[in-house]
Amino acid sequence: MEVKPDYLELGAVFSEVNLYKVPKFQRSYSWDGENVSQLCQDIELLYNAHEKDRDLPDHFLGGIVCVKVPNQSKLDTKAIYQLVDGQQRLTTLVLIVSRMIALLEDLKGIKDEAKLSATISSYRKKFIVYLAEAEGEEFDRLTLSRRDEVFFKKIIHKGDFDASKSDFNSHKLMEKAVRTIDKWLRKFTDSNNANHSLVNIDKLYNVIRVGCKVLVIRMSDVSDAYRLFQVMNDRGRSLTAGDLLRASSLGLVDEQDANEKELLELEKLWDEITIGGQKATDDRLISIYASRTSKRPKRSNLFDTYQNDYFSGKTKEEISKEVYRLGQDVARYNDLSEGVWPYKEPKCTAYQKNKLYNLIVKFKHTHSLPLLMAASSLSEKKFFHVVYLIEKFFFAYKLALKKSVSPITKCYTDTIQEINKSPNNFQPLKLADRLSRIISNHVSDQEFLGYVNSLDYEKDNDRRALKFLLMTCEEAWSWKQMGFKGGVLGLAGNLDKNLPAEIEAYSLEHILPKSVVSPVEEMEDLKHSIWNLTLLFDVDNSKLGDDPYVSKRKMYSESRLNITKMVSKNEAWNLDAMKERRDLLELLIKRCFYFC
Image (cartoon, rainbow, N blue to C red; front, side, top):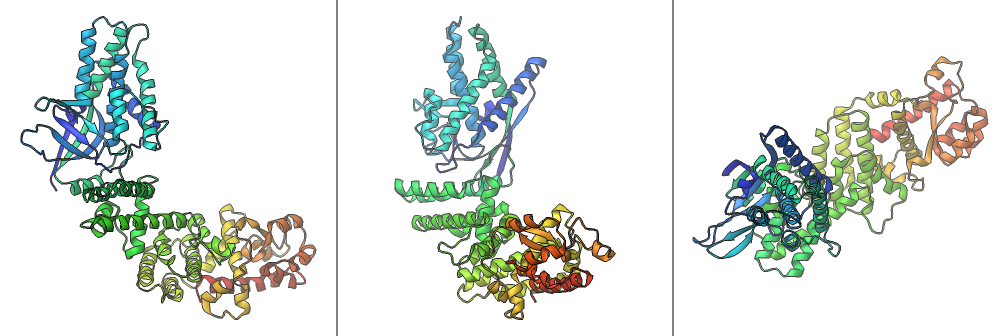
């Protein structure tokens, strides 16, 4: 990898013969008002420092990565660079200079019109166009991607920045950038003195030209430039691996004479694939690749990984097919990451489907997304079993006990391999066995029960865990009545599917009321533990308040919830009744979370 870095004044970046071209299919302009305002503010601080000390300090704007494009003729003196990274900043800087030119062109009452004309011409030749004398032709200093090229030209050459009729967000962002810049430039003008305005704008121009520094990294190979880009940090909105893949794949398709309709459809797909910024795009691509191959690629190698495996050396038909496939995978990833059930005509109930939402959104177990993507190719019943197993395991192993994720990663990748190898033959029991072994190897018999015993209703952070544990015990009731037949999959297959899905529908109920002080010290000590708690539907709990057990017993007996109904079998709520309940709940919890 040949790297040639130079720390240059911005004026030197746009030296006599330098031209920059954004790859034809690279991401469009994406700086919002905040990015543009920040750049303007940085330049203004530099301007003020110069006014105060007359000694112009340096201001580092960031880096750009570019690749020299070979000249087609020995007589061609232009130095054309393909701009791999840095387009957002350079585009905004050119917009700033173009608006300075527009401002100067509107000045009235200048004493020296020749000087004004020369000033405008010098700005234009430095940042807007290059005049190739041999060809007698002007070339734009900066050319944007095909989606933005025409609109950008209208702004810098004609001053037309109206994006009201455009369907592209990038055009609306450029219009917003122009309006932000115009408002900012008014700080340097004097409505009563055009000559004073000219002096100030020229000072500002020279501050930008000389005081703003850029690290220019010139590469000899596009792939190396993309690779280098991925390890560079940039305060602006850097390209993602998806943006680079977009430019590369569409470029390959375009080279094979794809028609305009094909290119537009692929561009729209890439818009959807890369939406949401760098981290979101990288996360999607990592999960998708892992779901396909069971291998988790490094962020720094995402471009190379996808380029080598799916795009390099392929025909336009193969590339198009892969982009469509990637678009479908992104849509599936987006749904799963929001807890959306992936089956169009589901047979599972809302309670069952909510397990996915609980796992991904509430528990934030996004590490499981590659496995869930692979599992979504299974039957709905098998997919539910996979979700159910992971939900129970992850709560106990990671959320409760904070164990290392390393064994989980190996378990998930092995399971992905099995699913991809033969979806029809995959049995969720294999996943249950793997998860059970992790529990056996890393969790002692009493470790999880110790955690359960430590939970206290009075601690806000414990209440959601208490509710989840009691709901799990409720799920296991029919399974217990069947003698725990079928193992943990018997549990998943026999839970009450008609329970309300949302955890907010349930409330925690103290059997020994909160306000009552028990004369039995041990009962008082356990009053806020799970052994003295049960579940009620929220509407029922509001009716009971802090009534004594004898007053609540009848409502308990009429409850739809088995773990509450069984409490009513006790004539009185005493220490023996509490210990009997503890033994039952411990049995259910161990069976459910230890997969035994």
